[in-house]
Length: 190
Image 1 (spheres, helix red, strand yellow):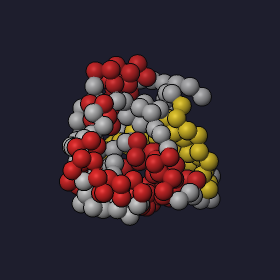
Image 2 (cartoon, rainbow, N blue to C red):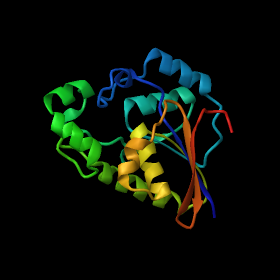
Image 3 (spheres, rainbow, N blue to C red):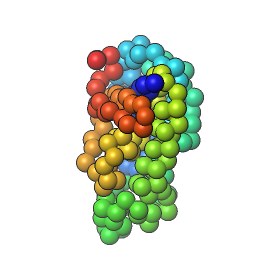
Image 4 (tube, rainbow, N blue to C red):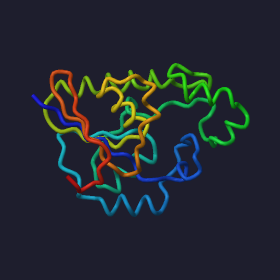
């Protein structure tokens, strides 16, 4: 019984251009156009989901996906850093930013640690693997990173070594608790 999980990273939004901790802002015009251009290029899925962020829901809408939002697929909760730029936080709290980048258990921002994010996504993947078929989810890049960390069984510290470009598909296929990982293809390409 094989399960295929396709994780689609959202099109670029304003927060990414500013290197801002997600403030749940909208897609940019270019992101909207690119998502719209990719509509109809993804394979059909038995189950579709979307992260609750505006950016992910907008991407799913532009792609024409009837996806249901689920809080379990939300990006990492950034607490008091949400909406601020990385530069602002690094100027005000350089030690905290350093800890955030090196300690997967850091929660000094008042949000969720990377380990907690990875555990949450691992639980979701485990539940998805209970049923064979195809799953498609539009999720934040940090959720894609967490899924890759879990699929490969690598330490959480590898999280920051994974780049997830906008509007790419990362595929996981597996059965029996073992996942294979296909990284970052453009929609419509196999």
